[in-house]
Image 1 (cartoon, one colour):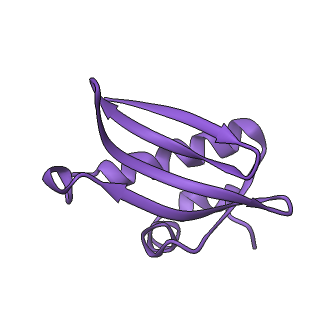
Image 2 (tube, rainbow, N blue to C red):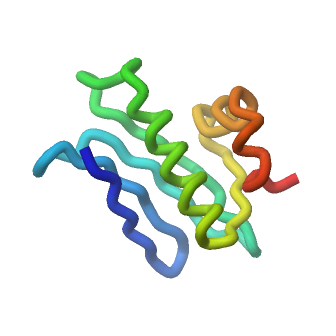
Image 3 (cartoon, helix red, strand yellow):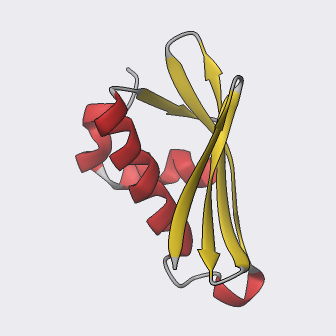
Length: 93
């Protein structure tokens, strides 16, 4: 499986592909200097198997390389930030 980043002017998406099949997606929008994660989606057949966690790791890695700060309105992303203090370096205060 591969994660592809699809940025656009108002934000972007990280899409997880299994071959030609889209199996997960995380979207964000830009607000001031933040990237706000507003949605995660995982194919029902893969829920509970770490796919959303892989997308969170990918967006955190991208934030680190791009110098972004992240925030979240998506309940999964909020939970993930709370559960993983190691993501704290990219979380907005």
